[in-house]
Length: 124
Image (cartoon, rainbow, N blue to C red):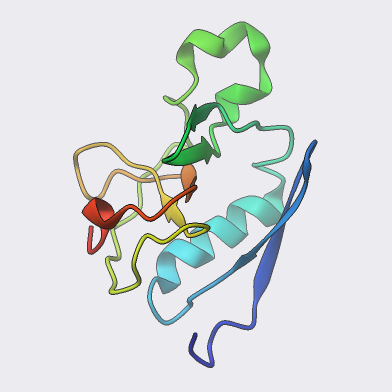
């Protein structure tokens, strides 16, 4: 890890806490977006709405706060998209990354955490 990785976020879940360490040199705008949303309370009450065993868990959808909207989980966001920031860090177990559509610049608030190495996602 480099010297710019000292800032962290804590994700509190019903199963315990996860500490996210930021690589600010690799994705500064993405990290600022995540921090802005977290500080505003955007993520409060959201759930990990997608769990794929051996691959990842996905969260950050504001629609997941409402069980009545379960059929729409995975489609919500902050109302804007951010520009992609690709880097050389591998998608190893525990790495957090932005979820997006096929368009590289379509991420907003949803993110996923790798449960295992996912080299096919590296550099994208």
